[in-house]
Length: 419
Image 1 (cartoon, helix red, strand yellow):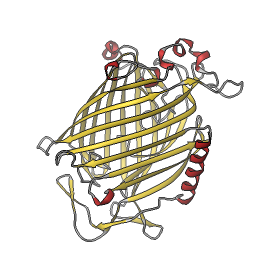
Image 2 (cartoon, helix red, strand yellow):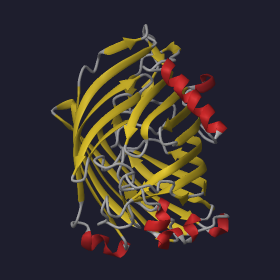
Image 3 (cartoon, helix red, strand yellow):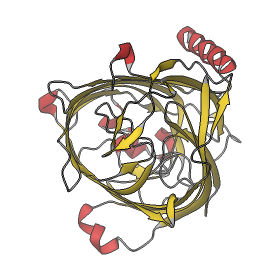
Image 4 (cartoon, one colour):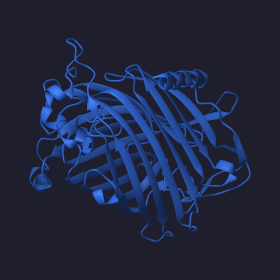
C-alpha cells in the first residue's frame, strides 16, 4: 500500500507539471521528406524527439484517474532506438505501468528487438460473463486483478518489394496472473457490486483463480503496403497516419505447460486493414476486419473480447467475452491544416494536423469456432461515434472519441489510431 501511495504522488506531480505536453528536447537539424515510405534527413528545421504528457480521465469503473506517458526516440543518439513509458492511477485504486524498449538493426539491418514489461493492480474489475447475449445489469460482477508481464520479440522486416513490405515477428511472453474475488459487495454500489464468487461460482472454483504463469511463443507474419504521412524511419514498424494502402496480419500463440505455463491453449488472430483516399490525401476511409480464435484451457480473463478504447468504443472494458470473436470497423477521417504547426511552451512542443472522424463498429463473440461461419452475420453489437485527433511531436497521435451503443455512451482519451 505504501508503494502505491508513492506511485500516486509521483503520478500527480508529473501530471501537474505536464498538464500540456512538455519536456521536449531538440534533435539534430532534420526535415523529414517521404522517399519510398522512409525518411531522408535534410537541413532546415529542428525535429523533436522527447515528449511527455500528463492526462486526466474518468470512467464508471475507474472513477477519476490521472496518468503520465513519455516517448523518447533515438535514445543515446541511435536512430530507431525508442523508449516508451506510461503510468496511471485511478480513484478506485487501479495502478498500471509499462515500459517498452526497441533496439534497431538487431542481428541484421532488417532486424529489431522489442522488450516490454508491464504491471497491473486493480482491486475491482467489471466482468459481464461469457457469451454474446450477456446482459450488462443482470450478468455483471467484479473481480480483483494483479498481473505482471514480460515479453521479448524479434522483428524482421524484409526489403521492400513491389508487393509491399513483408515482416516476421517471433516472441516469447510470460505473464503471472493472479485474479481474486471482487472487493465490491454492498447494496447501492451499482450493477457490478456482486463479487464473481457469488455471481459465477463455476468460474471462481476453477484453476483460473490460482496464481498462474502463462508462458509461450508467438509467431506473426504480415504484409504492409501503407503509406505514412509522417514516416518514422529507423527500421520501425509503426505507421503514424496512414494515407493509403493496406495491412494484413496472421498470428499464432501457443501457451503450453512444456514452457513452464500452468495452463495450455492455442490462440490465432487475423487482422486485415485498408486505407482508401477520398478526393485528396486529407480525406480517408479506414476499414478493418479482425478475428480472434482460441482452443484449450483459456482463462476467463484472456478470452477474446471487445469493448473499450480501440474497438466497440460505445462500451467500456471487455464488455463481451467468449472463446472466439469477430469485429468490423469503418472510420472516415478528415484532416485540416497539414502544413501548420502550433508551437506550445515557447516552441518546445508543436501541435499539428487536427482532424475529425466519424466511425461505426460491430462485433460479436462465439462459444465454438466451428459456428463462426454460420453465425457471422447474426446478432452483432453496434456502436457509432465521433472523434477528434491531433499530433504532438514527436509523432504521437492523441485521440478523443465519443461513442454510442444501445446500452450506454462512452468517452475515451488515448493515443494512437484505432485502425
